[in-house]
Structures are given as C-alpha cells and as structure tokens.
Length: 322
Length: 260
Ligand SMILES: Nc1ncnc2c1ncn2[C@@H]1O[C@H](COP(=O)(O)OP(=O)(O)OP(=O)(O)O)[C@@H](O)[C@H]1O
Ligand SMILES: [Mg+2]
Image 1 (cartoon, rainbow over the protein chains, first blue to last red):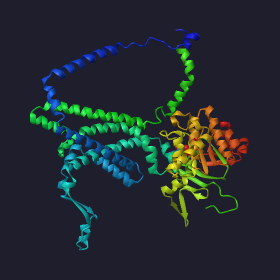
Image 2: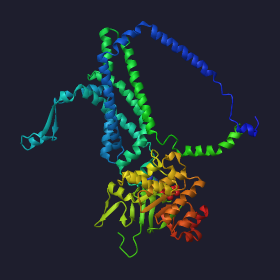
Image 3: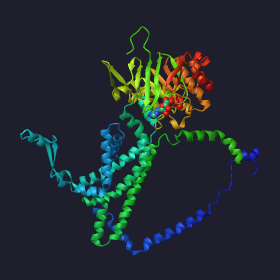
Image 4: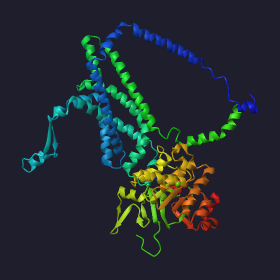
C-alpha cells in the first residue's frame, strides 16, 4: 500500500471489494434446514390436530377469556405504573415517613409470590364479611365513652366489592406496583443531578420538576423494562385461575380437559400469547420512539466531542486510508 | 437586616458565611458585597469553594453559619424576634425565580428544543401565557444569536450554542441577579468568545452578575470587582486591574502567576 494517492483516486467514491463472510452462509444453510424439519414436523405430526385448534381456539369462552386477559393486563399495568411512580417518588423523598412507607410496600409485595397473593385476595372475604367506610375506630371510641354511636356512612358486602375480577386485578396490580416502583426509581436515579439543579435554580417546585423535567427523561430508561413487565403480565394473568377468575388459558385448558385434546389447546395457548405479545411489542416500539426525543444524537458530551473531532479530522484520515 | 442607609441595598451581601459538608469546612467566613448593576468576578484555585458559595446564594446549598442577603432579604431563612426560621420549600423556590444561574455543564433539558428550554420556566413557574412566552423566548434567543436554531434539541447544538441557550433560559425569568459558574470551562477554546460576548452584552445592559471564571481578560475588562478566593475565604478583593496588576497577597500572586 502506498502512503500517498493521486488526486483522482482520493476524490473518487470508494469502490472496494466487501469483506466475505463464509461462516454466515454455512450458518444460514443450517438454520434453513432445521426450520424446514420443524415445519415438516408441525404439519405432519398428528398430535397437533390443526383442524381441532382452528375450530376451538376462537370459541366463545376462549374469546371471552382472551378479553379478560387483555382487560386484566391493561388495568393491572395502568394501576401498577401509576402507583409505581408514586411509590418511587415517595421512596426518593426526603420525608422519612414517605420513603419508609414506600420501602415497606416494595419489601412486602416483592416478597410474596403472585400466586400466593392472588389466592390471598381471592379469600379476603374471610377477613371481613362486610366493608364499612366511616370514622376509624368509631365503635371503640363509642364504647370508651359509653355511647352507642355508629360513624359509618357506607357498608358493602364483601362479595359485592371483592368480586373475583377485583381480587384478581388487585393481586396483579399491587404486586406490579412494587416492581414498577423499582424500575421508576432506577429511571429517576439515572437522570443527571444537574437537571434537577437547573430546574430548581429556575424556581420549580419538587413536584413540577419531577413531572416536567425528570420523569420525561427517565421514561427512556423506564419504557423498555416496562415493556418486559407488560409482557410478563400478559402471561401472569394465567395465575388468576387461582382466585378463581376465568381468562384465556383457563378456558383453553378447560376445553382441552373436556375433550381430552390437551396438547392442541396448549399449542393454541402459545399462539394466542404470541399474538398478544407481538401486538404489545409494536406499542412499545412507538413509545420508545416517543420518549427518545432529543437524544437521537447522543447527549453524552464526551461522545459529542469525539463526534465533532472526528468530523473535523475526517478529510485527512480519508486520504490516508485510501 | 442591613440598616437602611442612603446608599442602595447591595444585591448580594455576605457576612462571615460558613458552610461545611459533614466535617469538611468548605467556606470559612466569606464576606463580600455586590452592588446592583455591577459585575463581580470570582477567581481562585480548584476546591477553594467558589461553586459552593455561588450555590449558597440561590440556596442550592444551605449555609451553616453567618448571614447571606439577596436584595435585602435573608437567603433561606426568615428572622423574627432574634430567631431564625427556615423557609418553606415554596418560599425558597419563589426567591430562586429572581436569580438566574448558568452552569459549567449547561444542564439544558435534553428532551426540549432550545425554545422549549427557554419557555419552560416562564410558563410553568410564572404561569405566563404560552404564546407570549414563545414570543419573548424567540427574542431572547435572537439576542444570544440563536434565533434560527430555536427548534433544535440541545444534542444538536455546539457547546457554545448550548451555553448561550442556557443564558437565554435564565434571562427568560427576568432575574435581578445572574450567577455564572465557570460558564466557559467546558467549551472548546474557539467557542469561549461567543459566550463571553453575550455576557459582556448583559453587563453593559446593567445586569448584576457574579461570575466564577478563569478568563482573566474578561474579569479585567468587564468586572467591577475581582475577588480572589482560596481555601474557603476571600483572600483579596478590589478593582480587577489593581488585583491583577499588583496583587497584595502572596497567595494571590502565586495563583495569578499560574493563570496569566
Ligand atoms: N456536596 C458536597 N459534599 C461534600 N463535599 C463537597 C460537596 N460539594 C463540594 N464539596 C467540597 O467542597 C470543596 C469546594 O468545592 P467547590 O466546588 O465549591 O470548589 P470550586 O472552587 O468551585 O472548585 P472548581 O474550580 O474545581 O470548580 C471541595 O473540596 C469539594 O470536595
Ligand atoms: Mg466549581
């Protein structure tokens, strides 16, 4: 290679022979072969019973189960994220009561398995047969002064308020909030302290600077793991059968047990979950794009410096490489 | 409260201001006074407490001793009957609105455009009408020479441009005092001039400014007062030309011989 090049060579667009990747070709061939074998197995193996799957995977109970799965996922995530943000902000608050409370919440709901929590909520009717809204300790206080007084405005039977749906939703949402709190806290902590200081110096209150400055930036860090959580939630809704509440998997399994065709129904469940998850991934993609505003070019100053430096140096480097 | 006299109230007055972080004493009794419409430049070696002092002025740090007033009002406290009461977060925020601050590392909000950065505080904090704030924001960006870049995100601007946006952002709150903490230290040498020009313009327009800087040329030309800080105290203060040309204290001499 010569260190210098003629002007013509340097000015012309580079037309070089690209690097060959023989390994990739071998690997691709192997993958194609294995895929073909797999598809062949899917089509020819009797156990799959595709016709049976087609006839039953969209039956009325399954569709209503799928609807329940979606409703539970969406509501549990909405409540989980909202409560998670509140808990994370509490946890980072200088007020020890708030941060201590948030810590205990996260400690409890992360320690107890979701299944246990769901069974627990399913049986909350045991605790009180009736829920009252009113002055706390009213009867105890009344007893103390020898009065007969009742400070309750509203009484509801446990089975009306704690329906299977509410129990299932609470179990999932409250446990999700604990995980979301940690995700949001990590997101908030990832934001440079300079951002908070700049906002404070402009006279913003803590609440406003969280809402306007810190959280929008933290979202970039929060969204991907929240996508994970949502997908995990879709699948964890299968646990609400323990409440018991009926969702997608429960219904498919029921058909499977009734007709002694469990395997095809399990395949149907896989396909259903694949479909739901794929739709959610599209949503996540758009959310991530929304919250990466202003960061398409790296905001890291070190990187930017390097970028600028490279750009100014580029002409010299270019001719040396040619 | 400083006694009412015929001379105007100083914009900033510090009396034996002390600050410690745990056991480490960073400010050991700082005394100084900045009159309205003047520029005070602060120089000193790294770790001498310049940034800390600046941050005490808008209560980003709480002072541990002495007294500090901005425009005649105690910073962070209220004095009643010989007793000091800490101010509520809301009151502290209220005081900060009138003090602009420009940081060494810009600290622009990366998820907002240049104009978004400038408009944010007037709308959110002062409750200004968005259209008015945008018009005013554009004016300010014009003033720092960035009118046509108002829709760019900070990551798309050079360091010098980012710092000028940061200045416009602070000015949008109509501050009566501007604090600059080494505003040009993170900039490539060829970008320093554009930021200093904007600051010079501000000084000429009568803004009260405290500028921590290593730009001795700027201090000499624009500063009305030059303060040399070392090890948490003001070692020497006075007319910039006098301090630079004939420093009285040997620590000042040693420092100046390194930076000039
Ligand atoms: N939050 C803090 N906690 C503990 N120590 C601190 C804190 N902030 C500053 N310090 C210490 O206070 C001293 C003075 O810091 P300060 O940033 O005010 O110096 P400076 O004069 O601005 O220096 P530089 O020129 O490097 O910016 C340093 O020794 C620093 O380590
Ligand atoms: Mg500093």
